Image 1 (cartoon, helix red, strand yellow):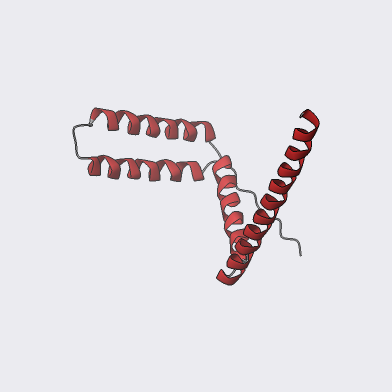
Image 2 (cartoon, helix red, strand yellow):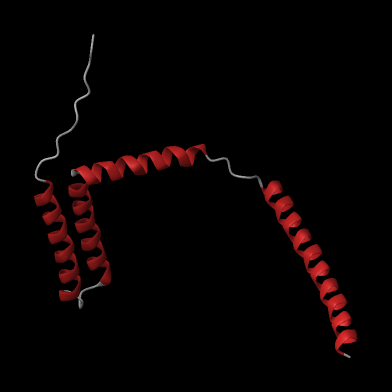
Length: 122
């Protein structure tokens, strides 16, 4: 028993991208044209236009692959194990200690070479 996975056929992608570009242009022009209106109304209109444009983009081949990428990123994000507060504090203290020791070593080397060069130069 063989079940072939059907690939979704994306038709009219060029037209869909043209619609998206048109929606973005309408949003930019409308925001400029209605600049005297309340920013809340313009924000709501831009959010609605953006949502419609996003829905059109998702129905294109590139939009679907981008959505699959985002879903994969969310799956990987859930696998991340974040350090505890104690681990963060311990690591921070270790880094500060190493920086302090390195600073002291460099300061001592600077003093030693400074004295040596002052003896040589006179």
